Length: 542
Image (cartoon, rainbow, N blue to C red; front, side, top):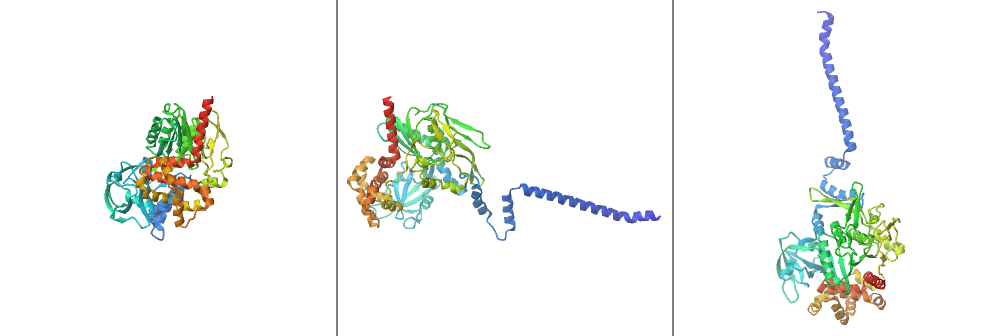
C-alpha cells in the first residue's frame, strides 16, 4: 500500500465527519435564521395585546386574573374611537336586550323608595301583582327571606329581587294600612311591558298630544295605537313630544316617520368608510300625511329622536320647537361574543334628507364630548338662540328651500329657552331633597279614599287648590327645617303647587293626570299651542 493510498484511508473518515458537522452547522444556522425571520415577522404583525397578555400570564411575578384584565381593558381601548362604540359585558346584556325588546319579566309594580321603604306607586294593568290584589299604597317589606325595609335599600337591590325568569315564583310580604300583620303573596313572574309611549291625550278639541319616551321594538305599534285614539277623538293636529328621548331602535323611528310623509320621500340615509350609502324612503303615503305636526325637542333628544325631527323638518312636514338636540348621529352594529358579551361598533353616520350630518364633533375626546351639555349651559345656549356654536356653518336646504344647519344636532324652527324664572333658594333646597315628590306620595297615600273619586287632572287641580296644598306643603318642609320665605314663594310658588298637583294626580290616575296638570307650566308646550293657533289663523285668512 503506497503512502497516498494510506493517507486517503486515514483522512477520509475525518473529512466525512467534518463535512457532516459543517452540514449540520449550516442546517442549524439556516434554521435559526429562518426562525429569527419568522419570529420577527410574527412580532411585527401579530396582535400586541394578545402577546402582552400571554407574556403576563407566563412570566409575571404574581398570579393574575386574565379575564378581569381583559374585561377592564376593552372599554379603555374603545375610548380611543368614538363615544358610542361600547363594550357590553355579559352581565348587562339581559337588561340591554329587555330595554330594546320593550319588556322584561317581573311582578308588575312601579315603586318608589321613601324613608328606606319600598312604596308601591302603581300596579301595571294585567300584570301578576294586579291579578293577586296588590295595590298602590302597599309597602313591600319582605322579598323571599330578605327584609327590605330599614336596611338602606336601593333601586338596584329591589330590581334584582323582583325581576327574574318568567314563570318563576317570588314571595313578598306586604304592609297595608288597616292590617296589623304582613299580607303574604306568592307571585309568579310574568312578562311586563316597558312602554315607549308615556301618554296620549287631547289637549283641546282639535289637538292631540303624544309623548314618546324612547324607541324600542314595540314603539311603532304603541305610537299608532295612541295616534289612532287621538284621530278618533277629533285631533286634526298633533304635538309629538320627544324631549328627553335618548333614541333607540332605528326600525321604529323609520316606521313612525313614514306615517307623516308622502310615498318616496327620504327619511334618513347612512354612510360609512366601509358601508355604502343606504337610503330609507317612505314606502307609501302616510296615514297622517295631512295632519299639522309639531315636534318638541330639547338637548337630551338624541339619535332616533333626531332622525324623526330631521325628517319632518327637511321634508317641510311640520314645525320643530324647543332647543338644539343632542347630536348623536353614529350608527352602531352589535357584534356578540361567545361568552354572552357584545360590542357595539360604530360603522356609519346618519344624515338627514337635506344631507346634514346629525353627529356633533368628538375629536377632543370622550370627556369633552360628555361635557357638551354643560358647556351649552355655560355659554348661554339654553337661554339664547344666538349663543349656539355650530361646528358646521354650511347651509343645507329643505324641500321648500328653507335654510337649515348641520354640525351637531337638529336646530328647532322655533327656539324656546329653558325656563329658569321660577328658581329660588327655597325651591333649590326642596328639589335637592326630593320633598315635592315625597309629600305628594304621602298626601296621596293618606287621602287615597277621597281622591279616588277624581278621574282627570282638572278635577285634582280644583280639589287641591281648595285644600290649599301649597300651604300644607310649606308646613311639611318647615318641620324638616326648610322655611319658605315670601320672596321664594313669589318666584317658585306656582311651580311648586303645580308639581304637587301633577304628582298627586299621577299617583291616583296615572300619566294622563300628570301631563294634564303639568302642562300649565310647560312653556315649550304652551308655545307650541300658540304656534298651531297662529298657523290656523293664517290658513283661515288666506
